[in-house]
Image 1: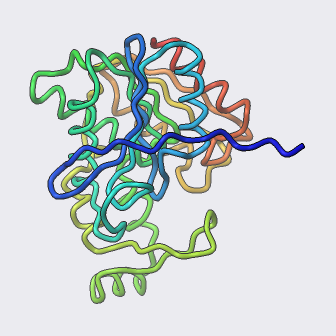
Image 2 (image 1 turned 90 degrees about the vertical axis):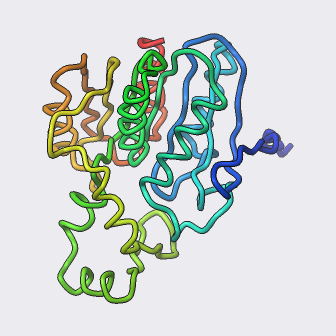
Length: 258
């Protein structure tokens, strides 16, 4: 007998600027948990889905959403920038949650989580932060992990044509790295100074991660000198950290903060 996959409820939407941002929200106890996905990922990813299962079973409030140009939200991926996705994240967190939240950021979402924390503190809402769990946090990735690694030919193509189609090991189709993504990202770089999270931080990092090397995470730790920080290194873990043991570790990390 073939088992039917579980039905997924259609998302709700919040308007941010001119874009409809898709989200799914689960009511429950606080502190709530907010999922911030990675570059080219979406809220139906394995880790987000398993975290939602945990939230349902434990009665925990949970919010997940898609950045514009991702998943079920409006917009073209090529039009996105770090600042735009940050603005959407802030709008959803402030509009769809109440009380302290645990921000769970995966890859690019780790950078977004730290930017959200900084912005919440700037506007006097640091008490909305219960903690951050960062999975292979790709802080400053547009500059440190993309631009700095690109050949001069690729850089020239981006500057002259506005984009470069980057091959992906996760998809048969390449995706565009745009000049706007690189240049606008420079307004949000964090690793050139000290970083405040204004809450406890736990970092999960795979040591076999080719996209965000574990030494990049260690550089972030050095910049987080004024907040409680712990790090778990998965010796055989890759960038996705989606194995059962990785997800169990993720859930334990969230539970410790909660």
